[in-house]
Length: 80
Image: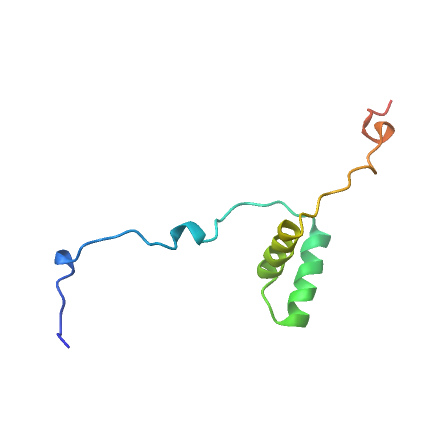
């Protein structure tokens, strides 16, 4: 093995897995949601952000949709 390698002679190529990498975003969550996932993460010894991602992946795979029927016109109407 050489002590030094000349990397300037190497041909560069794009990472074929770059499209599969996770994207960093800012997400605003309620404190009780964070507390819930942090508690679960301690129980299962898995980082809480990984648990949130696993849960969201499960929602995508099962095509789970939100049921927003609990919102009524009265609840969204301005009070006064």
